[in-house]
Image (tube, rainbow, N blue to C red; front, side, top):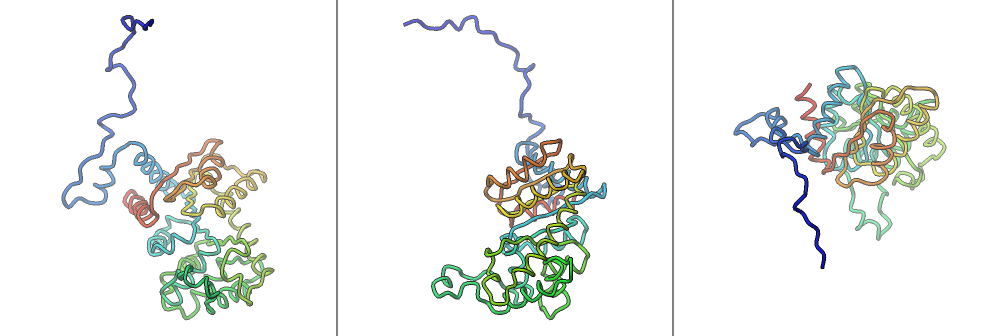
Amino acid sequence: MKKIDTSKIRTYSLKSRESKVRIGDFAKPAAKAGSFHDFFSSLPDILAAKQFKSVVAAIVQARRDGRPVMLGMGAHSIKVGLNPVLIDLMERKIVTSLSLNGAGIIHDFELAYVGQTSEDVDKEILSGAFGMAEETGLMINQAVQSAAEGEGIGSAVGRMIEQGEFPNKRMSLLAAGFRLGVPITVHVAIGTDIIHMHPSFDGRATGAAAQSDFLAFCALVSELEGGVYINLGSAVLLPEIFLKAVTLCRNLGKTLQHFTTVNMDFVQHYRPHTNVVRRPTQGGGNGYALTGHHEIMLPLLAAAVIDQL
């Protein structure tokens, strides 16, 4: 059987080759009693760690330049205990706006009202009791119906919590937004949230307030040039909202070319990767996907940004 002759293979010096991994990019061992700055500096400049550093740098540069850092998030981020971290970022003027889905206002309200949230759906679904907490449906729906003309869901519910008798209002994202003047928009799909099942629900009022929030969100996106948009744990709704806002703003002649997008989730889904990371940044921006549990990754990101600022 004929065999190839390897005696005439051409080689080159290893020293002349371009390589993707260098010793200078390696991690450094943790020092005893080291600071967070020491830890952050010790991370390798390779793959996900390199991307993480790039995200931190983008956020820091955006705020130094007076550009926005927008955060859109799903409700799971609230349920894993991140409200204090998020409120701190709002108070430090690092996060300049917050956008939630409908479930987000439910968990935020319940935490502010009774200090606990997230019912056992598997247990309650059998009896038909799932989602039927009286105060949650009644009070949120009444707040939405009380919204002034042109006011969104985020502002209306935030005002109710901040101005009402809520023992844990300092743990509320919505109240913090109202108190600090940080825009909070809420984006709903009717039928997806438990408060839509209650007799107090008014679809017309909800739709009007949700439309106001969408238009407000688009206005925020229109100023995103040089800024950062972070999608934290929303797999469908907020990535769709963001993509529509980007194209609407470009249609109106707004400059949206050089900005950074980040998707943070413990599983990288198609829709956020496509509609947040890839499509909006094709014209010259940068998109990143950071994979990990919210309760670890967001505090880590927040600490790194605060350290670098």
